[in-house]
Image 1 (spheres, one colour):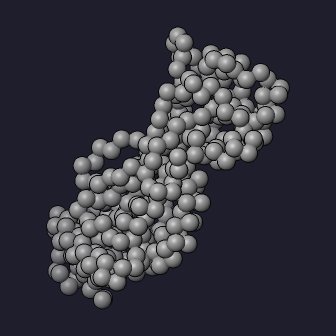
Image 2: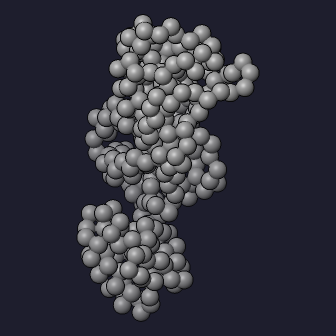
Image 3: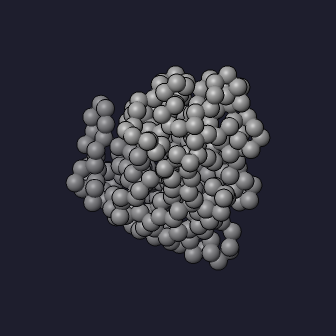
Length: 293
């Protein structure tokens, strides 16, 4: 077990390029990771990392050793997979990356935790495009196309955007009947946290697209919903994020016939790994419950 712990410390350090991050992922101090790697280097009589005051990078020998260690842990995962299938109970740690809008997925995730209490979820919320394999994730949930051939994928569901405002807002201003009329309204925008670009409103314009007013710009979705509910303007949001508010009348949807975009959420995971029972039930559960029709 000590040897496996040392190998795990080395793999986490190599993948994160940081003793500190590796320690956080394994729940130990950075010095404990450094000492484990040092003992491993002493036993192997080879230097595994180039070290500087700011970062660590694997040496050529370290990269070679990293590939071997990954194969070892893949074999351990395969053994756990076989045993878990034999017992039929999904269990263990499941590390998943979700977009920042994933906070709106928490009711579904909470339902999964109640259904599978022996699966320990380790969730990382970020709009950064993570490297699933290099950063050690079991899977990620993302919108948009897939370009990494190393990953398997399954569609979790489709969504569309809706323009919404509160009844109070539309009592004060007549709802627009065409996209061009939005120029006379308060518009609440979402800015991508990673790129800093505004998320475009996917509208069918009669002529050319026009610049919309910017009454507020936010880089997360939940505050946009709150501002819209407060009657401070119109927001363009995924339908699943505002479904309940529209159903109970807190928000009113407009210009549905002029929306031209539909999005897809997918679950991605490394194709080189076995689909463990814990990952399989998570993928199946999210596909069945995340974006209900």
